[in-house]
Length: 323
Image 1: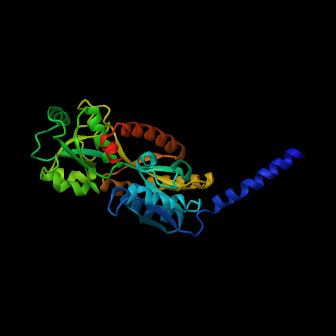
Image 2 (image 1 turned 120 degrees about the horizontal axis):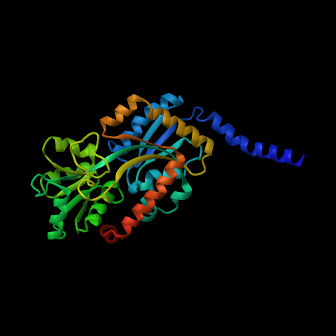
Image 3 (image 1 turned 90 degrees about the vertical axis):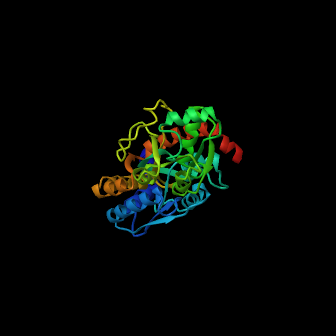
């Protein structure tokens, strides 16, 4: 009799969460909060994904861009939302570097968020000004070793993949570069074309049009494999720098405390969306590839990336100076 009472009690405790998951999303719209400015890769991925989620779930899916604070502004909106699966964060490396690099009062990334799905990845490209005397990444390292701090490199805001990649280049090549941060990859392009800044690291999709037009020189893709969108450009690994591997990935996070059954339904809906050929084609037009991970896989991946990036930033001169 006692065992039966325990079973019934457990069912009563679980039934609200199960019932909520079965009824989710109901009629309430979903909001995708992005820390990217409109037109950025994160924003574009969120908008492509929102169209397919709206169709499959039968409710409106709204993308809200909240740039600034290194991604903490958008993150805070999701952290303080009701944990009901209706407010989601579309994010990238900020998720693993902000707790130590840009801590925000009242925001705990371990407590306030739960992994949902990994959705996409775009490879990073190292380019040079046409007038800069380097045709490969090994040339860059050779020049920088001969003349410390003479080589300048542009990148997006501190903590973004392009900044982390610039740190990797400096540390793996054991060279002292001059770091030049910008608000975004596109903002650095005119200075690099004019050789006011020698190098830039940004998303392949951002830089490839300038490379194709001859305004910039492509030196290396910073990934284990060549980009399917630019198979002629060698990788840093091929150039003898196996440590220089970093992608710009995009994942979906939910509010901490969201019931596991709702996370599972969210993940299933996102998986269905990623299987749509039209979405894959839409991503490809932006230079973005599908990268699929479920909630558990994403959680392990985030832990691994946090360890890797925090170790990198501990030896960062630019971060040390900023602090």
